[in-house]
Image (tube, rainbow, N blue to C red; front, side, top):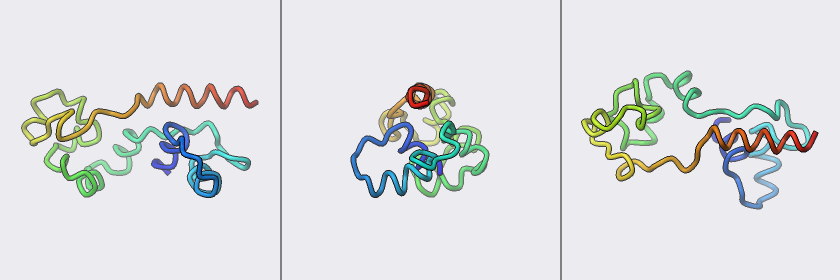
Length: 116
């Protein structure tokens, strides 16, 4: 659901009606029968809540595997020394964010307001 929310409300710009309307968009709470349309998952608190030890992150993002649990979900907030000690070079071995989630959420909610 976190991925669906991210794709459907923050990022999805392709035009695949079968996958989008019946799949990603429905899971993200978008579409004709969507509820609640206003829910926009933030992947960071979701990860912190449901993967507090960072096991999922470490499995699927091995470049972050050596980070301490406290910063596994937000390596940029750890400064430079902690990631560097774990072999992570922000912007090099781990990419910069592709968007500002707070801004994307604001845009999505503003767009929904226009459809009322």
